[in-house]
Length: 468
Ligand SMILES: [Zn+2]
Image 1 (cartoon, rainbow, N blue to C red):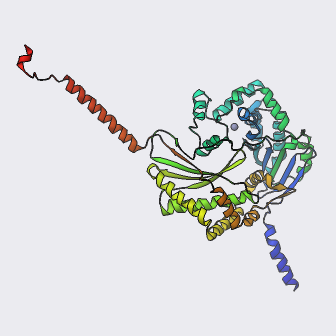
Image 2 (cartoon, rainbow, N blue to C red):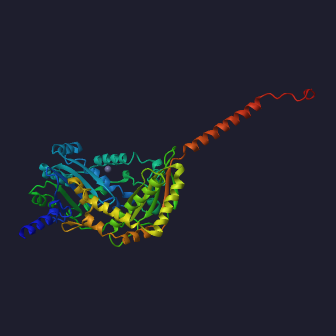
Image 3 (tube, rainbow, N blue to C red):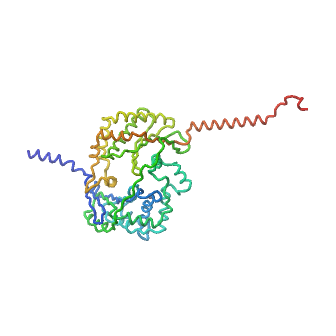
């Protein structure tokens, strides 16, 4: 009996031997800085993410790039050795870093050997706290951002932006709906004072989360309190309200991409409904289901597209789900028919229960292997901060399991209530059209030549009498 009990206990405790990634050591420092620590898979490495709660969406169109500008400025150096000296110091510690400004946050991403974790954290703290920003650094950072955005933002580019040429289809639609700025903000107009104000207001301890995953130093909590605990806090402020849909968009538009070619890209975009329960998980499952349905219809049954895909994006306060297909130019109309039939079928009959169950199981299974390693786990925490509370991240597999077929069907019906938006990207001319044009041109040249030849050929005198 006792043996049996021991066996039961052993079996019950087996799953807990695997890393429970939902549980972390999480707490607030006295200055409000949120710390998330997790002993990770690899002990000789740490993945560090410092997430600052300020992103592009916190600024209106003219100032959009301001947080991105500050992000670059913070790498310009902490002493007279400048940018190069800073990089050398990190190299000497065996680390690598990068930073990203997204619509929601600015995040400093560091990978480093576990043995140097405190020295690397010292350096990151110095970057945040001690970087002196001057006019020269500002000019350099502006040039870098211009180059990142594809060169100097001249009059032509500004004009092209307004014409919506050169943007992916979802960006184009978001602009049309009023969810996205029609043109890039002008980095050149941004001043030192604006950058400083942003830094003071948003780079405050109570607006930051420090995530560290890997072989954690035993003294890390005490070290953090002594160092990062000294960063100043500010009075928390409301974040700017996100853009809402404020304009109408055309149902179908053809977008010109390049000059010549026979390929086309079709995007069928829908605005995601706002769901009361399990919003993200339900829409994730729905997008996986639609990706399978698109693959089944466009590739397997009709051979129209090699790699159809479904993508979720967010613009302002709205989510956008786009069904994408790479096509031959001549197949666009047929693909539209096939997709229209698919939507009609889904509107009428809803999701196929067996297919939904299979796709849901696959999504749950993926959760157990999709965040392997310290860096992936740190990135996962970064992306899931909204699902964090008191030392626990909500278990994504459990949340997926909760989504019922009825819930998914309701969301689908809500989304397909509208016809959606069609955007077709194709080059200005297909080869057939080019050959047609060339033939026409050739015809015109021949005709003109013929005309000239006839005009210049001397006419035979019609009668001798008229000459006299
Ligand atoms: Zn950048």
